[in-house]
Length: 267
Image (cartoon, rainbow, N blue to C red; front, side, top):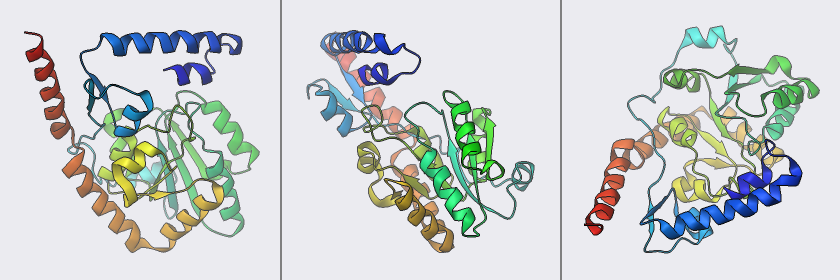
């Protein structure tokens, strides 16, 4: 919360330090009065310095029944993505999402004769800023913005992608993040290229590929572009991994245990 207040474009710059101060106060008070505090990973628990006796690690997860490989030739045709290699991102376009290295890479690959397009699903935040970046890089015909789509249709959009992206800034807001989209991508049998965030590495280790800048991103995308077997292998192994470890029914059982433990202690 304090880090989000400090960087939020929705808050006037002169007020951000004051907001961050009160954010820290509110957060500290909530920790103090809580019986238990659930955190999505160990990295976040360590970063927040939550007392061990109060902390319960309950990660994000995925609806395995909803998210799967739901290939839709009709949707791909509608989006103009037939006969092309598609990079994709799903989610909000808030200030911690950094798509500029992707646009820079696509422009370079286009000049090398590769037919690569980008599908961006979502709009909250900096949609117009990203559209302006696409125009500035001269790749408007290579990037499709869908805006918001119904959540139940998300698997069809992800299934249009050959490689899914987690292009986050590695800052105080995102470094311990464990985005839902990571597991949704993997459940749809898609290989993932992500910024090297501590929360993501802790959760999935080497089951995704990591890139820290546009040059490294280009290498990862070229590797996956050339190697269909690797894409298939990462996709199948990724789905099995999240099904075994990050399905909501499994995670909800753990949350139920924590709630019952707290209720028992309060009797």
